[in-house]
Picture 1: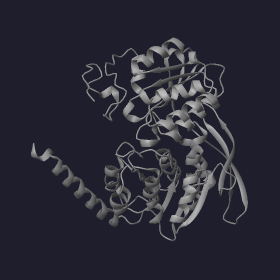
Picture 2: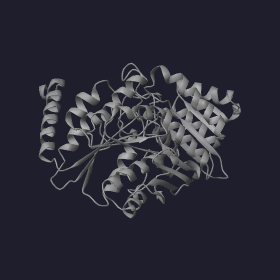
Picture 3: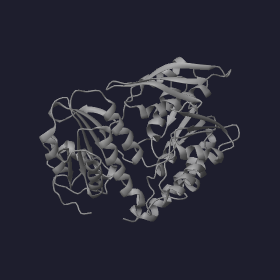
Picture 4: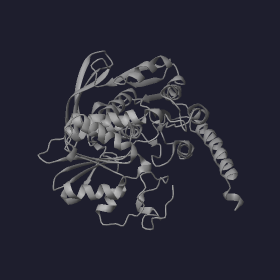
Length: 420
């Protein structure tokens, strides 16, 4: 049908973008906060929104859509009563930030979460240098009276500070940051920490906070939200209340009932080197008398960094003392070999070709109260492992799938007719 053609879809999208830009001009009352980086964008967006919602009417990015479609759709939801607009600026192509996102909407405040080589393959941004350049454009457009909130723990982000003429505030676990955290306690219930910061009178202050997000890596999102909250006139009580309300999203370090009475840490929605590293560190940090098992799918879109990054994950697993590793897919073979090379016993490391084989291995080793960490890139569809363990028929054994929808909705789940 002609109206379903690619040309008409492009025309519709371009028209919607122009309408959205005009609509934003009619709703110029909103303060716009932009978040970018290679990881942590979604939870930082959620943390900022939750905190600001304690005082203001907010609107945030629809987290289930690709950013290139997401921003215009979100802008068209703006109403005169909205006071704060929180947008996630995700990119995976050169020129996308400047020509699509910033053409449409420029922020007053921006958060840079961190940089890793995700999307550095030839089909996407091409190199780490390009990632830094493209994401840095968000800082370049900030007004002089704006605010850049930057992760001091990230070397690449520290180098990006010179890109902005706005005021810079640093956050992190490093004591050199303007807002930094210590006294961190992570459990299966919440994450607690102490924040050190300078108040408006340049007096050093501390506050104890907690969040429903599980893991010390989420503290960065909370610190960014605290900085924005104070900047926008919220009280410490309002900020603390907002952070306490945040709960994990499904597939982003969410806790579920695992097989055989185990505890599942489901982190299967996305995977890059930084998020995989902090997820494994979380697994290692959690206190238990039972086994800790990591089931890992491949990390995608790493280009020339792919082999090295998968090897580094294997070395980390051995260093952290995780009890078992089940690695899925060709690149994860490098992870398995690296773990063994660094001292993990071969009896505790399994490399398999697909999800079904992984489930078979897992059934043999997992018991009640064991901790199971599940991680992999979206197109690896690690949730299939859970479906197999539930007794569902999963005939698509491919390690890589080009569909983005959840496997529960996939027509190929039972037929096995998928070709890639």
